[in-house]
Amino acid sequence: MAATDSSTRTATISPERRSAIERLMVDYVHAIDEGDYERWPMFFTEDGRYQVTGRENHARGWVAGMLLCDNRDMMIDRIYSLRQVNVWEPHAYRHVIGPTQVLEAGMDGACFSVKAQTNYLCVRTMHNGEQKLFSTGRYLDEIVFDDPAGSDTPMLRSRLVIADSNQIDTLLVIPL
Amino acid sequence: MAQAIGVRPVSELIRWPTDDLSRIPLHIYGDPEIYAWEQDRIFRGPTWNFLSLECEIPKPNDYVLTKVGDTPVIVVRTAEGGINALVNRCTHKGSVLCYDSRGEGKRSFVCPYHAWSFDQSGELRGIAFEKGVGGLGGMPEGFDKSRHALTRLRVEVIEGLVFGTFSDQTPPLEQYLGEPMVAHIRRTIRGRTMQIIGRYNHIMPNNWKLYIENSRDTHHPSLLHAFFATFKLNRLSAEGGIRHDPANWHHLVFAKRLTDQGHEEYSPGKLRTMKSDFGLNDPSLIAQWMEFDDNITNALQSILPGFVLQQILNSVGTRQIITRGTDECELIWTVVAFEEDTPEQRAIRIKQSNLVGPHGYISMEDGAIGGFVQQGIKGDRDKQAVVEMGGLTADGQPTRATETSVRGFYKAYRELMGS
Image (cartoon, rainbow over all chains, first blue to last red):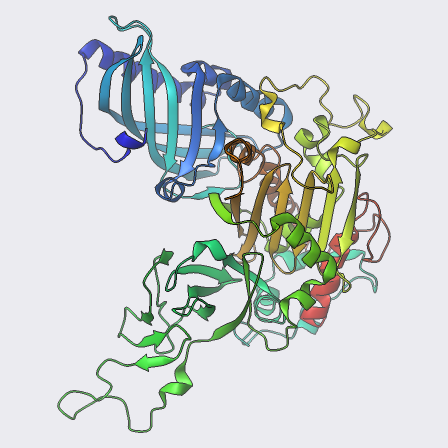
């Protein structure tokens, strides 16, 4: 991912693929914002990787990010823990995402792979109604299509959430 | 005196409900006058405050910004290779001299406002237009630059951890820490070369003292943190204990996960935190290697006033408390690896960063719980917290089912505050 990291140039993909990626982006944030957390791991491939980090951590190459999952089972564990194990004050997110910029696209083995980035803004609303701008940043994604020819449902092979701020207020339990 | 100006004396502000250490008056978590005294008597008093890791300023003229309580501080590696710590406040008008959190090649500090310049020892070396322009203006003849140096802290380093103190009265660092604390710091770092692998700036919705209490509260982990209890990572039924320095100011709590013999309190259904149905789909998260000969798998070392050295399985790191007013504080988590690590060991440390920080399976709850206390006490500032488990004193005890270390913190707090 490092090679694409500093890139801000747009690559081109077919309208069908672009449309499928847009659906993935939108489905992802709605699943989280509506509390359907069990769906969250399912947006990833089995060997998918999810990591949250801060801009400063990322820039300095500090790799031990927050909520680091290097496979789908770890994501499932996180959600089970969120539901059943951890103590936290009830709250929900509302994500607003920007258009997705495709950075690179091409065949990667049997998969069609797209590297892309999408800005997000996330407001946290507590159970008592208190609202706070919780996080802004960008998703740096590797998205794969199983079917090299078609525009089947794409999945995330990797999502690196680079939050603009290194600060987290109180806790980070729901994935961004 | 730096902050407690125009505020009432401590003796009028704090009345301890009992002569022993078993009660804490709740208003000390929200009183701005007490907060001002804490800045002066604790953070700028005779204490050693953690400033930074030595590995953050490896080369001559590297600097990093930090804070001691509310006070902004520059930590600089001098041209000669030493480490100086200076208050980041121009002695002219008070602007910060450095406003970028780190940098290199810093031989002098020049104020962005009127270009007063200071050397790495904090001496005022230059004033722009000191002689005026065309014989007019400028500083008066008798202006003595040597009286306008930056405030400089004393600095000492142990195992790559840089500490600073404002006070001439503070004993040398190792004496301040005491032998058991020095021994454990050396045991944890063991002369290895630290590399930062992550940093989390955790904003906590509570007074700074509530986090320090939490870090010393040895009987909460398996009660609050289901993750610890369920995976038998840190239960009171495992071999463990508490060590103190001779003055009872600092504290070490440790556990050996593999010695856990169980206890009926942990039977299924008795404690919320024992989840018999919870198993990890990916148990690699809690796989560890036995890094230390003493077989300790969990150790938290809390150094007064606001520093914690952590070992959770193989997650090694530091925690530094920064005050942010009466109702909020920031905990800066820094997780490290060592140059001597194998790639596999480094990968384990990276994965175990899931256990710590604001997102940590365990530590996220410490962010929540301080806020719960701060919310709960709002209407009852005249009431007290009860810290009586394990007795009324602050001595070292061979059990973790005790609040002796919380009492130890307040013993030191009362000595420092003079209350």
